[in-house]
Image (cartoon, rainbow, N blue to C red; front, side, top):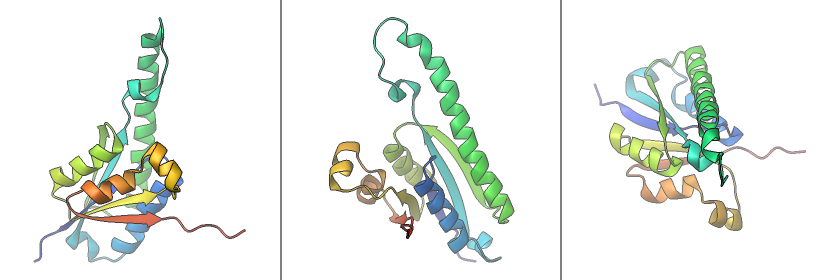
Length: 159
């Protein structure tokens, strides 16, 4: 029997990320033999509470526990959605992780830790200027991950 192909999929709340996750399940895990050849690792990079707000002054530190609670709740909701979708599609060779940190480093570290063969991320479709200002997780991973990187773009809707 051939070795498993390990695929890491990065997930956040964006519709682009959700689309990439669903696309991966539909294209790689839809037939009954896929469970024996693919292992899926779903990773959500939870921001640290201090990176999520830019308040200064007295009392700002008191807000951190509330922000952290909300970030944990969001992370749990994202992972629960992924678990439910996998269960509904009978995908059982899957591992779920919530890792605190910047998504770029979290995903590249997950690739190394799991010895992944492929990293799958969604694309927000930012233009050159927005990518330069905001940074692009997919661009960063394409240049720094030590495996193949698949960037899944959500089709544009025709109005």
